[in-house]
Length: 197
Image (cartoon, rainbow, N blue to C red):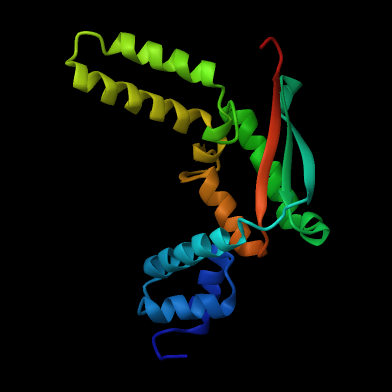
């Protein structure tokens, strides 16, 4: 190791990111010992790594529940991975539980934009058009699209800010998990139940 990159730095970076030792060392060398830049390098590599794995079949996995204190909100969540081996790891089980807890707290309506009910989306467009009334016609469409995009980012699970770390979206958390576990993973579906809703 170069003089400025210590084993301690590599160990600390590995603990923070979950990346492999050699990847951590390379990122620290590439960033000249700057931890923040090394984390960014590892995140980019994780995204690239996850993209390569995206086409692989994820037919194993886990279904888990989360019941919020008091039993007023409950979630059933299915997340798939490639192998039974990964599905049985504590990291994967914790990930599924964390996503179920997030769904309980953030109440998304679907996993991704592709799954959103088009009637619901059209109602949001109508509300946005009503709010933009009186503005120039070319501005109205931009306002409507902006409000619809905001609605989607707040209501599609993969785009929501993660309740345990609002600096990350659920998609970023999923991508990091794919990079860490070395397998494709898919948040397949969820059902959220709330007393009186």
